[in-house]
Length: 226
Image 1 (cartoon, one colour):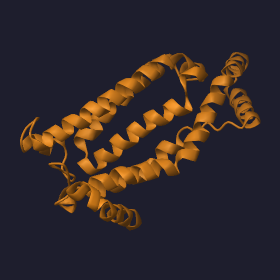
Image 2 (tube, helix red, strand yellow; image 1 turned 180 degrees about the vertical axis):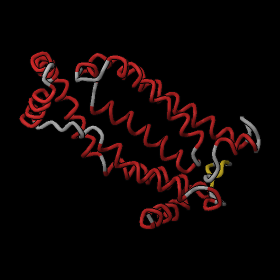
Image 3 (cartoon, one colour; image 1 turned 180 degrees about the horizontal axis):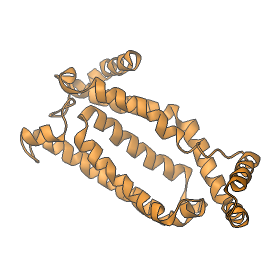
Image 4 (cartoon, helix red, strand yellow; image 1 turned 90 degrees about the vertical axis):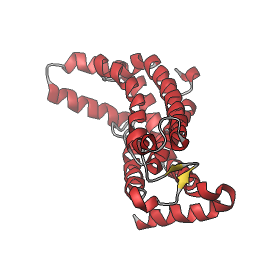
């Protein structure tokens, strides 16, 4: 953990001439971008895997129809199909799972007094939205920073929701129940809750990563390819 903390601190020092008191916030954004850049090969592999699963959906449906009454045989045939086509069922989860340590690093490192004196504009990086409301209200100096973050996250979540709803049929075709597929697009709005309750330092990581994900998926899953 100390290695990553040292990296963020060094980035903040490098950015200080450009961002002054906001240098630590800028360092968190840059740190997030570096984490996501490092995970890009896994994200590309996950995208290839998802496209392959969509392509194999008819064969999966045929296997379920043929072996639906024999779960053991069905599982064996599905695994054989995945192996033959070099598709990993876990590939799509790896980029998200590998971000968890970085998120909790910022959550613990930048909580409370540890971030005293570091802020994004007038919002302390160690505080959360509740603290901003208690010190100035919704449109106070710190509250306005959160309003801006909420607007950005809501815009990205809406974009993600519309894409996910459009792709619901394809998602259901690879084995996700229709009820689950209908709920999944709404999960993008859960980021608003996360941004509100975690320290602002961790919220910056979440917002930057969410924006990166939206851009990444747009590039990896262009509409013309659907």
